[in-house]
Length: 146
Image 1 (cartoon, rainbow, N blue to C red):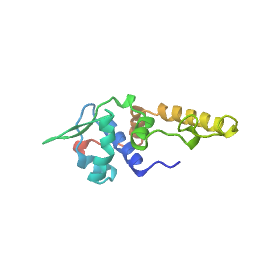
Image 2 (cartoon, rainbow, N blue to C red):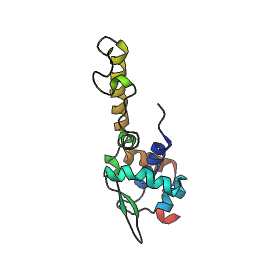
Image 3 (cartoon, rainbow, N blue to C red):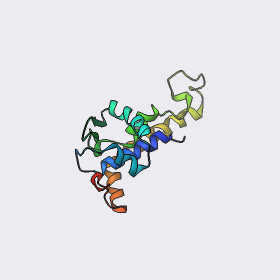
């Protein structure tokens, strides 16, 4: 499984916003410039995040985007699910009975466990921790520094 470019950019945009002061409106151009994302693509990838209540938007003069949730309450799993939809790893896990071999196939049980472990691991990585980790590696980028 390789995540899409939209998912990678969504993760980068959320990480960028997580590094800003709480409640600060971040201009679209600042996110685009800092993360090398085109404005149209940023708008497209943020729409599902707005719909899920992870990101908020403010229109007009001084408008932009902001985190609607605390970065500690946003995980990699949240972002992946908004961009990719549910993560199944294999067709046999999409819904019970989807595969007529699931009751005697030893690989079905393995896929099920791997999926559960994978989802749990993605859910452990929250954006407050990721931003703190990045802050130890890079100076804080304020949207007003641009």
